[in-house]
Image (cartoon, rainbow, N blue to C red):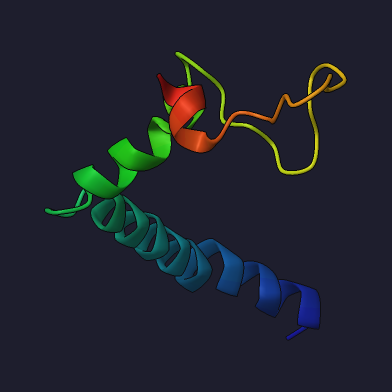
Length: 78
């Protein structure tokens, strides 16, 4: 039997079954109980600082004048 024919038969039968089982495993892993909190937290990352962005370390939006200091995390959140 030629190598191509052997690999083609393997891909058409057992590899198809293995990839289908892998797909079902991924779907079960994503929709397992208890994963909702993890995925909700990840999905809300862009909205964590929607009201006031957190200050970036060492970078200020405008040059500081006099005794001005950059806002702390708590000040930026208020």
